[in-house]
Figure: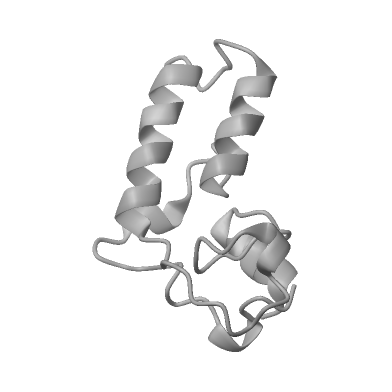
Length: 104
């Protein structure tokens, strides 16, 4: 998979690394070591953000600006709910192709 395919399947931005928390302006530095994104951490924060920003029907309660800020911070889309979450103990981000890391 190339970077765009990984981004679509991970519901991430193609401008960020799907596997780690590397700053976007450092993506060209393949030697940079950054903390891996952990599925449980990201999904937990997404659930909190959904509870705060969306109503029970998944409709926006607040401002679109707030959703964009959360998505940028978490590097993940709030909607749709990612089906990968249904697979227990699966580290989607760590399973993303490492040869693609920081080459997008």
